[in-house]
Image (cartoon, rainbow over all chains, first blue to last red; front, side):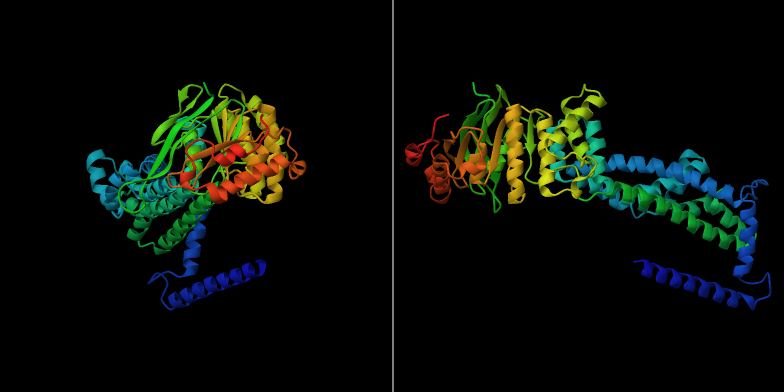
Length: 259
Length: 279
């Protein structure tokens, strides 16, 4: 409903304004430079940072655009590798109830482990903090896609597989034309959850490894006591998260089907 | 040697309650000649769809076997296309893509253009020109089954297996699609094995009708020769005495004679008194 949408928008903007005004009122009583920065100070910082997002003045002073790009690069590597592995393993588990039941206990034990808990093991074995961070992202985005793919493939209607058998489709073709499209809605739902948890994990991972990335930026600005930068970085992280999710939502709409 | 030989096929299922097995049907034996249209009629639970699945290779017989052109059937194959009661179209594919999947599988050496032309011809044959880019969800039941028929016929299978193909289609559309089926069958002379509840449909379409007793432990009671000359016109058939007699016979069998003890694989006395024109 168009009228509903207008009302939702009005309410949404009002809530935002009330929050910002309350924030301003709360912080205005303190002298400048003391206590939590107000929205005006954060706005000024944001303006400054967005004017030069890609400058590079050495390891401790890079533009926010560069930092975000570093994080997104790590995300892409870890997430894509994890997604490929999860879909492949998930298809195997979904097609073989026996294998599924045999592997499921291990998945259940590993799934609730924070991806950061793996960091020491990665640092010890591969001795490279950048690659370790990518592997942390890998661990964080593995499980939801794996579980959803296995479930989606296991619940493909028998009829579709029967048609594939009657047509004697080769394995690659069966995978490409029947199994993956049939399970696509479940797989993409898993990919969507995974990209969210990967983006959550990367900030923490970069705080630990340092060097580059938005997580390192937040920690560095905290060490500089530049809280306006921290607040602006939080907003940027949130916005990028929304964009990542919106991209996968689009993919999900394209692959959806009704029976 | 018969083209398609159903050789004393028995099917047991594990019992629902407790150990042991339940016999669905026992030692069903008959054969189908090349180009023949044979329909199996019987009550629900006599295992007729199970028998069709065994011929398709989707299920295994517990005893006996099915032989096609001298080779025993052990797995599904593109020489035995199935038209399913629930259509079983791929919902993420368009009408065109659904038929193309089958044509590609049947003719791996064809190039894209040849495949597309072939698909288009069958899509048009079932009256779906203009609906090529639609997905099954956007089609009525009748249109979906037309896609199912186009998919099955497009591969020119040795045997066409029709599993209650019109059960989920409204009565008016059913007649139209039956006529289309007859048209395509007359053109290609595929060997057809159909399973149905619908006696009129069986008589209209078939050369012979196999009657099953009630399950469990169902048996093939008799095979009735239809013998009404083709082309059969639905409107004229309604008054045809042969048609009426045959219809009464099959219906009487289903109402009274379908008890398990009625069948021993041979014609019952009722069948012997039945006057049907020889083919």
